Amino acid sequence: MDREQALRDLSAADEIAGRVRRRGTWYAGFCAGAAAASLAGVFAIGMSPDPWWTVPASALIAAFVALAVYGARQPVSPRGFAAWHTGSMAAWGVLYAAALGIGMAVFPGEISWWMPAAAATTLPFLAAGAAALRAARRPA
Amino acid sequence: MTRHPRARLDDVIHAPVRFSIVAALASAREADFRFVRDTVEVSDSALSKQVSTLEKAGYVKVRKSSVGRRPRTFLALTAEGRTAFERHVAALRDIAEGRAVPASGGE
Image (tube, rainbow over all chains, first blue to last red; front, side, top):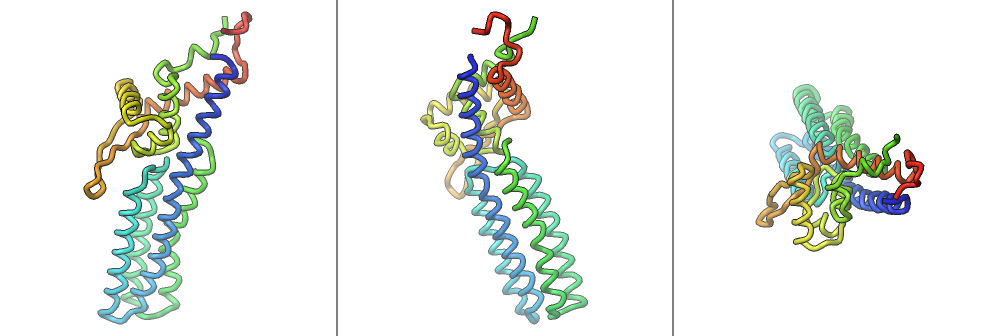
């Protein structure tokens, strides 16, 4: 092993690592999709009269199932994926429960609650997506 | 006497194909067998053989799964494999930078 061979190996490793990291950026798209579904779904649930809120609620579940299938088909799980995904889903669950629990009891049909509440539920996904993009741009 | 950094190169990782496999897995939590095969540009059988060597060394773990009816195999570095790769890359960097080269000038 000489200096030139070491440089060649390091360069090859960097090139391969870059390809793998780029393939892991699908998770940012997943997060953008989840954020969009949550924004539209929570807002529509809150603004729909009983029993019609079940339609956007079902659509939200269907969107999340579609995203899960999309995620399961990806060939690479990026480094940090488990922490980002667990953290974002847990935070989203708390925000979603708070938005619906408080909104349906106190602010039914009030846009001044449902718009910011729906926007708040997107934050965990946006944070996880940003973390995935940052990680894809820096070396392992 | 100063040791040349080549003494810190990992014998298991040092082989070119295994080095490429480990470099690919080091940037992921886990990766699909076929993706690694295409990235490293080897055949299924060559990848299986090298993965088996890495698995025996405790550097790679293999997980079998399925999406629908399609069976899939995922590869991931173990903590031990990640540490070994980091040490190997650190040794390569030292060689590339000419650190700790003996007075004879190396190989």
